[in-house]
Length: 278
Image 1 (cartoon, rainbow, N blue to C red):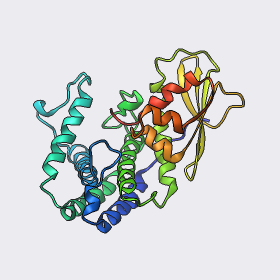
Image 2 (tube, rainbow, N blue to C red):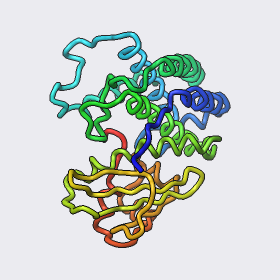
Image 3 (spheres, one colour):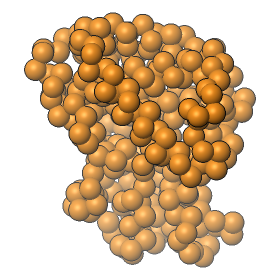
Image 4 (tube, rainbow, N blue to C red):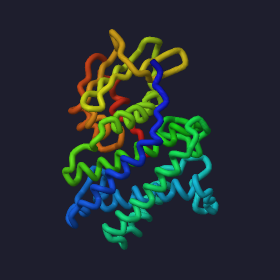
């Protein structure tokens, strides 16, 4: 069964509200805790969430046009470097802001973000294609979903750092994984195949599900559901899955946490799949 449209528009509001509630409950030391997001502390992840919400509102809702010097290379080759620079400059500036100010600003910005995405037509063309899926054009529901995965996984980085456990609604993670798994055909684009070659991905936990990546005449496709005799089977928990797809596991960690049966070499691109720009 082909992957269904994943409409996350109504999920931003409860997700962002839960993030804000946690931020308001953190102690001063919690804001300085390390996270799985590289060198970023909790306060840096919060600042980044604020930045991405404000950027989305400025560019898409308000039609802000950046001067040429402030835009990425039109070829897309420098997009990752451009994004990294945007992120780093904002994080440095946010050092001037207190936890309370960051929280209050994010509460306002995330409410406006939820207001905005709820007005969008999911079937329209996306303002920004989902490049980690290899898209040069995307439907708007996919771009909205990409934004939802950003909010969810950064919120989970904060929760992980402060020992808050998972979000209250496992359905949010299930939607995140449905969107993240769309990166698989692009991740396997250089893997030669033949019809019938397949990788079944079993994800366990509250956001459990089974998906199949299969080679067809035109290339790789990912579907919901299982195959009776796949070439390779990879099994992981939902907690491992989000860390894998959102760049929080090294290859050795992924190899130790993902159980592979069948052709192990065919699972290797899965362990390198990322549903973010890296």
